[in-house]
Structure formats: C-alpha cells, structure tokens
Figure 1 (cartoon, rainbow, N blue to C red):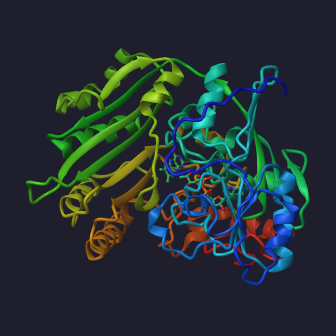
Figure 2 (cartoon, rainbow, N blue to C red):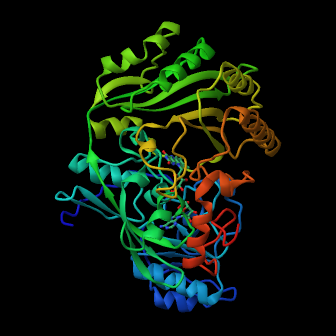
Figure 3 (cartoon, rainbow, N blue to C red):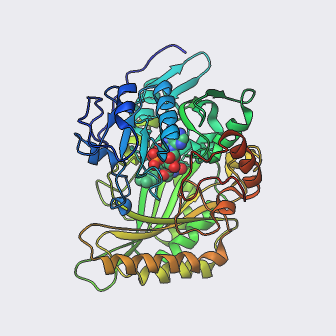
Length: 491
Ligand SMILES: Cc1cc2nc3c(=O)[nH]c(=O)nc-3n(C[C@H](O)[C@H](O)[C@H](O)COP(=O)(O)OP(=O)(O)OC[C@H]3O[C@@H](n4cnc5c(N)ncnc54)[C@H](O)[C@@H]3O)c2cc1C
C-alpha cells in the first residue's frame, strides 16, 4: 500500500496528550511494573504521572468512580501490544484493550492494565485496490480526514471520538449501512495479537475463524487487533438533514415510520423522540427528530417525505436544523458531533416489523412521564435492512441481519444532578425498555453494550454463540481477554 495520508486530528474532548514521555513510576502493587517499563521505555504510564487520570477516565462518566488501572501501556506497534499482553499474562495482571474508550458499559476500563492503542492512528489508502489500511487507534475523526482526501468512504459513525476498532469489531452502524453494509462488512483483513503473543493476519483464507469472529464479536474477546483493512466505496453527493417537529408529534412519528418502512437503500437515518427539560415548565419538551443522509437530490428526498409534510412541516431553527445538498465529506461535517465525555445510560433492541400505533403510544407516554435530569432522554431508531440483509446471519459473527430498525432508549445527566434524581431516571428508563419489549425482538446491538442486559450472550450473538465459544476455546483457552460480558469459554 502506497500513499501515506496526512491525518489531521479534529478536537476530541478528553483524549489527553498523545505524547509518550517517560512517566514517574509509582510503587507497584505486586507485579513488576518497572520491568514492564524497561521493556517499553516511555510507553508505560502509572498513577500520579502526567495525564494518567485523564487517559484512564472512560468516555462514559457513569463509570468514572471505578478503581483506576494500575498502569496503562500506550502501545506504538503490534510488538508493543505483544510485550504488554505477555507481561500481564505472566504477572497475573488483568488487562483490557482500549481504542476510542467509548464502551457504554466501561468495558475498556480495568483496575489492572489498559493496553491503549489510541496513538496508533495512521491511515493509508491504496488507489489500486481502493482499500484503506487503518491502524487500530484511529477514531472516526481520522477516517474523515484520510478518506476525505481521496473522496472515498466506508460505513462510519458520526461521533468523532469513537474508535474504529470498537466500531468494526462490534458491527458498525452508520448512515451508509443500507447502501454499502455495516462497517464489518467492508473489513477484508485485520491483524490481531493473541493471548500467546502471536501476531496473526486474519482474512478469508488465513485464520478465517478469527476473521469471522472479528466481524461482530471482536471487541475485547479474542486478542488485541492492531490494524484493519477496509474495502472503500465511492463517496456520493448527498442531501443531509436534521429535521425537528415540535407539533403533532405522534402523527408525525406515525407518518415517518411508514415512510421509513418503504424507504430506498439510499436513505440512512436516525429517527428519535426526545424529551428535554424546560426550566419554566412542569413537563419536558417533546420533539420528533429525523437526522441523516439521502444519496440523491433534496427534491427527491422531500418527495419521499410528502406524507409527513402533509401532517406537519418541520421547524428549521437556524444554525442546528437544516436540509441541504452537499458533497459527501462536507455533508458529514454537518452531521458529525465532536463528542465529549458524558454521563449516559443506553439500552437497545432490534425491531423486526413496523411499530404499531400502540407502540408509538408507549413511546410518547413514557417520554412525557420522564422524571427529568438536567440533560435529556430519548427513544431512537436507526433504520437497518438494505445491504445489511445481503449477508447471511451466520456468514459473520454479526447476527442481526433480518430486522428493519435498531431501537434504543437513552438518558443523559451531569454531575450536578442529584443521585436520587439520576436513579429515578435510570429506573424509569428500565421500565421504558421493558414496556417496549412486546414490540421488539430479543436481540440487542453488542456495540450499545448494556450492563443491564441479563441474556446478553444470545441477545448479542444469537445463533452464532456456539461457534464463538469454540473459537474462544481455541484462541484464548485461559480467558486472558475477559470482562463482564465477554464471549465465555462455556455456555
Ligand atoms: C457517543 C457515542 C457514539 C456512538 N456512535 C455509534 C455509531 O454511530 N455507530 C455504531 O455502530 N456505534 C456507535 N457507538 C457505539 C460504539 O461503536 C461502541 O461503543 C464501540 O465499542 C466503541 O469503540 P471504542 O474503540 O471507542 O471503545 P473502547 O471502549 O476503546 O472499546 C470498546 C470495546 O472493544 C475493545 N477494544 C478496543 N480496542 C480494541 C482492539 N484494538 N482490539 C480488540 N478489542 C478492542 C475494548 O476492550 C472494549 O471491550 C457510539 C458510542 C458512543 C459512546
């Protein structure tokens, strides 16, 4: 692969310094951390060191009071990752991998060793094969910069700080997915460092079992991935939009869901119903939001929305709400979010058939009764189907291929909200999630990883669970890579 691209890094809250200076080493707590520091000079961070606390803090501040890691390795290469894994294994130190740090359940956090690949951000594009070679620490922001230069795309997220590693290893949903598949469907090769310190190339013909597992179940389960190669696609001109309705909300949602059910694959959207606190009112403001892109003209997109416009036209508050044609990457800049650490609780379920009026009633009744925090709550749905269905549920580890919507509930808050208030909101959200159960399947999206899900093994992996367990036994029989919801050695 030729052509190394200069990758500009947009500002992402909380990533901390990317420098690899030697850190003052605190007293060890059993393991010989100084030995690790000698093996990886300048790349081992210990408590008390510059930036340690910032780097150790997960994106979801809900987990920020967890015990801090004993150490962090800021790996610069696959060899560094191997050294760190073998040292941790031989010293009995629990380890986790971290890329973008955005695990909803804080599963890239440990009181042992974080092997952090987030400084490995190089992306190279090969014009001959139209493939992009992406190092494991790249985040969405690096993909935007690198693929923007060559006017190509893959399926990516819109939150700039989310790691490509976590995204692709758990599937990867984005506004392109109905046109060109999930992020994991574009993966053609990946390198992984296993528990035994082997550096393995995985593709359709080499280590094909790990390659299969990496496409939907790779996050923290079988080893640490150090690079990903993606087949890219042309970046089309788009209509991008962020539309909000603040009147006739139920009828608007009904009409929108009907449109979405028959929508062409060129349409990629998140539809949501949001509740926001209003200082002077006793009830939250409820709005319907349609955010996304259409690979076609504005006129054609608005034609699709005719029946919704007949119910009500969206407000278009200047600055944040828009509908406009744009080249692909400038369009993504409009849709993207810089991202900053926040307090969040989110749960998901796949929806197999169009939501009934009763289900819509449940959504609005719950959001109107939300026991507020200072930030907001929502129900949301990402339109699935399209190219995602072109792949069989057992062709990759990503099993969710037959649904039409990925739905979710979410609540956010800040440190200024009283703990009882937050607890009330989280309990309310669990009730909302349960009330939607008659209208959804049992399946949940593994990348919206949910510590509250009890049947998570089947919910994330369905019929693919048995094969994943076999692969786990073969490649990580001592369960070096484990966390509360990792692929188990037995079912
Ligand atoms: C604000 C926000 C926006 C999001 N938007 C989207 C979206 O648009 N589409 C979507 O599909 N998902 C989205 N997600 C979910 C996201 O895909 C997952 O949270 C994903 O796991 C994050 O990856 P990460 O590398 O940032 O996180 P991390 O916390 O670093 O990693 C997540 C998991 O993968 C493991 N892991 C990390 N790096 C490696 C590696 N190199 N090798 C092996 N395992 C590794 C970690 O140990 C952890 O278990 C979003 C999440 C947030 C918080």
